[in-house]
Image (cartoon, rainbow, N blue to C red; front, side, top):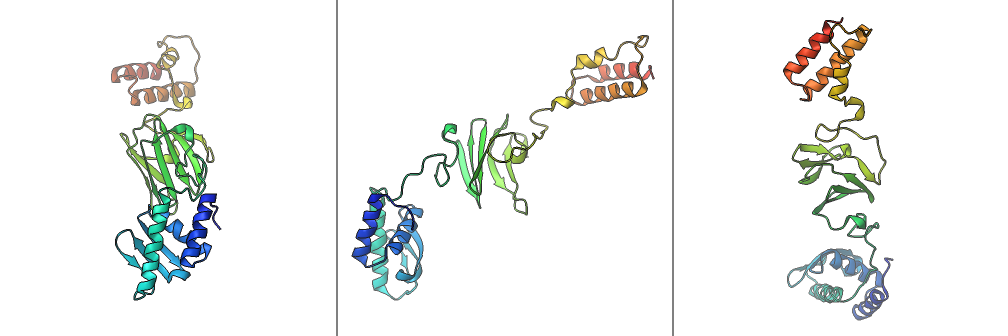
Length: 255
């Protein structure tokens, strides 16, 4: 049986006696009305004719569709539950940031700009942070300099998550993990950071590329490696075409 507050238990007992229904049936109907925001309910209770629907001030449907007495019972019960939910704390309040809470993300993140859910996944967007809950496991990502416009779940075997930003569609798995999840090695995006292993200061290349009459003894492999480094700097826009060609010719002359 679902945990109830003392007020909630009193409500269940009163409704159970009033409508001659079991406590389990009453709790089921309270949960259905609560899930429907207090204005509607979809339920499946053997004591109330099986599957049915209720809408406040409107339609009531039960399994035994010609049983008007049962319809009236469901309508009256759901209406009474709806009114009670406005003033009675039926279920214990779950602390923010814990499983089962509507505020499932770490409470220190505050209020999200936007949030949503799809299948078994929920997400919330904060300043420089993206929180994702998959199967009750919450992972917080650093969004770097992305302006997130929305998160979507790719249909397929991996159910991978992507988000849209000013750089296009980006995989969530490419973002650095701040907390939660299995922290993988950081992956690089063209839009974000460049790993230190690939970053070369232009001055370092120039220092390693003296004029042709230098007395430094370099192997062919070292010179080729410096040319490759120059090429990467050129592709990154750090060296102009003229600078790249000048230094490349200087290095080639030493082969």
